[in-house]
Amino acid sequence: MRSYNFSAGPAALPEPVLEQAREELLDYRGTGMSVMEMSHRSSEFVDIAARAEADLRELAGISDEYHVLFLQGGATGQFAAIPLNLTSAGDPVDYLDTGSWSQKAIKEAGKYCDVKVVGSSKDESYGFIPDPAQWQTRPDAKYLHICSNETIGGLQFKSFPEKSVPLVADMSSDILSRPLAIDRFDLIYAGAQKNIGPAGLTVVIVKKGLCGNARPETPTFLDYATQADADSMSNTPPTYAWYLAGLVFAWLKEQGGLEGIAKLNERKAGKLYSAIAASNFYRAPVDKPYQSDMNVPFTLANAELDADFLQGAQARGLLNLKGHRSVGGMRASIYNAVPEAAVDVLVDYMAEFEQTHA
Image (cartoon, rainbow, N blue to C red; front, top):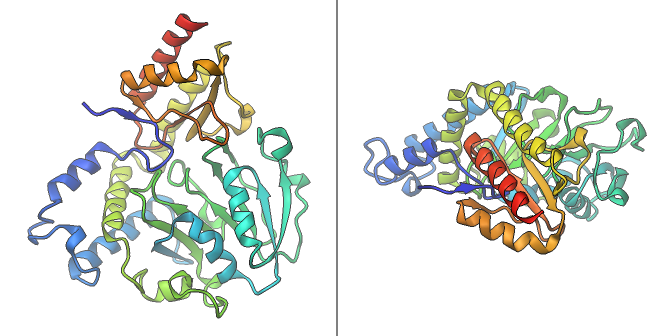
């Protein structure tokens, strides 16, 4: 029996996807080869790649105004790629600080640009998202960067600000979890290892008009125009991760698309947050309007019980509930592929543990 995996990433994958990958592992559709053995130039893999892009475009409503790139280097690589592609040395760029991943992006961009932090809730332990009306944005900024969902802190945008400059978003931990108006954004990027597929793949959705002006010092494999011209294959791409992402996209379509998966995600998150709110033993650190549907951090009334809680959870097949080392406590990451049954078992265990230790 498989355990319930609440890991923040690499995260749970849909069982039907894993089963199909197992079935095709040694012989992909009569080729006599595994996908991971194929040339990325082969007709078989080119078809896999094209189908994955088509399904992603259909799921997310991505128009021909955008390139869709399947790259390497993780979202962390994009922290540098974005300023290298979108700015010249010393250009102003604006960043909102909502947690750990925002801070990392800010630090990296500072190597290339004049970075301004337009707002932050750091002094309040990142318990909320600053009001967009209070952001100190600059009209000449080359772009405004946000993180739509902070994986570590569990802070999520429920709606997005109007933009006067290009809007760039790190959506690594909530992409494809809900319907999204893609045309509100000029660039979206996401590491795959949460809602798209296994680690090793990064998806970049970028307006075509923003490509073609990379700085001369930009590494070739980070140049959006170069990768777009080569169909994301200017160097050997992470072929097996790309294939698995395609299987995930097909699975999402079978779940009713992003509308269908959003209903499931809202129900899962609602159950878990309700259990926390109804208890005096558990506490959610994020203000209710900003609580993430993907990453649910919570603390116990007595931190000395954390180890016991985790041990009991593991005995019940509830894995990877330990909070990030920077914040402590617990964190349940309930991405698309985490079944509702996993949340039900977790909520029951939380009630049992509270009754025993309160």
